Length: 125
Image (cartoon, rainbow, N blue to C red):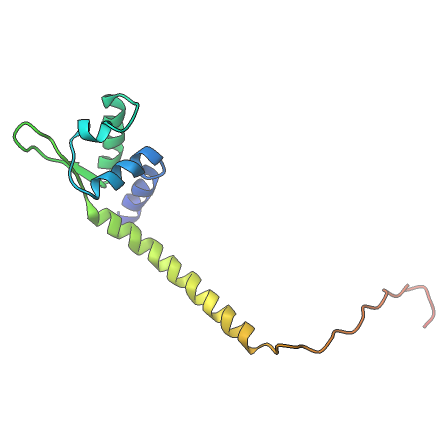
């Protein structure tokens, strides 16, 4: 279930407009009109983006008198962050092991012998 929600969230955020809407909502709640203002698109287009974000669990809407503000749902962002952090830590551990291995190597290794030409198997030794 969480993996499916994770897939929907990453898929929803693949679009730059939706990422921008999420970034805007980190500042505070906003109506569809407020969210649509910076874009040269219709309100319907912004509403479609919001539906995708709602399906992914990234935003929700409520009713506040005449307004229907859109809220950012941080729980899904925490789920995404935890998933990314797990793989970031693994990569960091691999780099630390590589750094330790490189630190063990001598600074001035002995020169390697010159390469020899491959022998012709039909020649007598």
